[in-house]
Image (cartoon, rainbow, N blue to C red; front, side):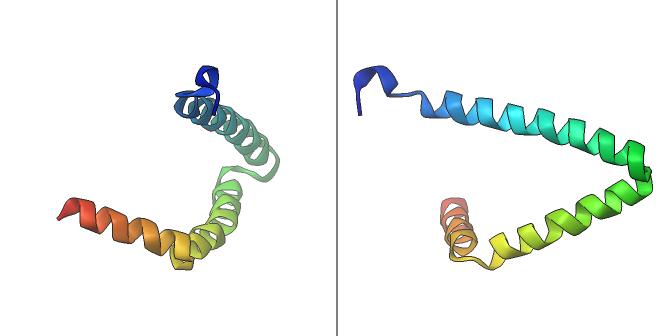
Length: 73
């Protein structure tokens, strides 16, 4: 990797996280305005829960959990 690109991964990750957070807030506001606050919360949970379950049962999720348990002990 070129020297001028080294160490920029954390900054890039932070920029991506902030941008996705802003997009999520805007989309959440639109959903709450169109469907109502209660329905938008239920809809958001219905969308995010399957993704969280897939990550929990995927090899990636198990590897991360194993690494965290090793780090804790």
